[in-house]
Length: 97
Image (cartoon, rainbow, N blue to C red; front, side, top):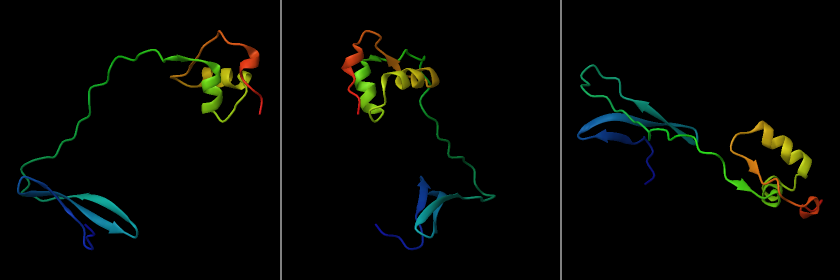
């Protein structure tokens, strides 16, 4: 489908939004009509209780962070949420690049 004038988003038989071209991008324009008797509502899933991050070996984090050294990986761990490094590892397990 390659529309040139945009696409209508329907809810039943009613148009609730339209796509509008802006160069190579498309934006979503909601319909603002006085006769509208409904509202399109989008909700996500309810958030779950936060779980502790999975503890992974330093070698895996080393690869994920483009071969960052062990000292810097531990600095990153303190700065971000969701990162847990296994403390039981050999200093020589992470190769220096």
